[in-house]
Length: 233
Image (cartoon, rainbow, N blue to C red; front, top):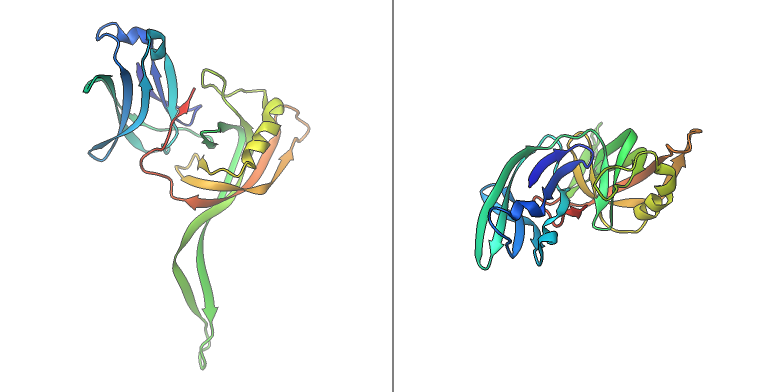
C-alpha cells in the first residue's frame, strides 16, 4: 500500500496490492480518508469480495499543488475499522490538469494558462462631479480564462500517453465540448470547477504528434474542499 504525490497525474496517487492483506487478513472493504481539519472525509471505498479486489490504484484529483494533505487508509470488517496506513502528502506538479469522472487529461507540453477575476462593476456620473463613481454587485465573483497546451490521457497504469497526442486529440476535443463540469488545476496552485466554452482551436505547428489545443473556460462552482470522487486508474 502506498499514498504518494504523483507529478504526472497532477494529484495524489493511492495504490493497494492484494499482498498487503497478508498480515491482517482479507477485510470486507478498504477505505481511504482525507483529513479536513480534524474531521476525516471518505474519498475512496473499495469492496473486497476476493483477494484480487485488493489490487487497485486511484488518484485523488481534488488536490492543489503547494498544499499538504493527510490521508488514512483503513480496513473494514463488519462495523470495525482498523487503520493500516497513513501519509502526509505535499502536492507538487508543474502541468495543467483537466478532468472529471468521464475522463482525465494532462498537459505534457507547452502549458499556458490565463485567468481573470470577474466582478460586476459599472460607473455612474453624478451631477457636479468631475469623476464617475463605481457601483459593484458584491455577490458576483468568478474566474474565466484560457488554456493552451499539448494534452494527453493516461494509460491503465496512470501514466500520460506521451507521443499519442495525434491519436487522442479528437477524443479530447469531444471531451472538452461535452457540456459537463470539469476540474481544472494549474501549476500555480489554482483549482476551479469550470465549463469549457464551445469554441476550441488546434495548432500543429508542423509537428504531427504535438498538436496544441486551446480552449476558453468559465468558473461555474467552487472547487470542493471535500472531494466528490477519485479517478480510478
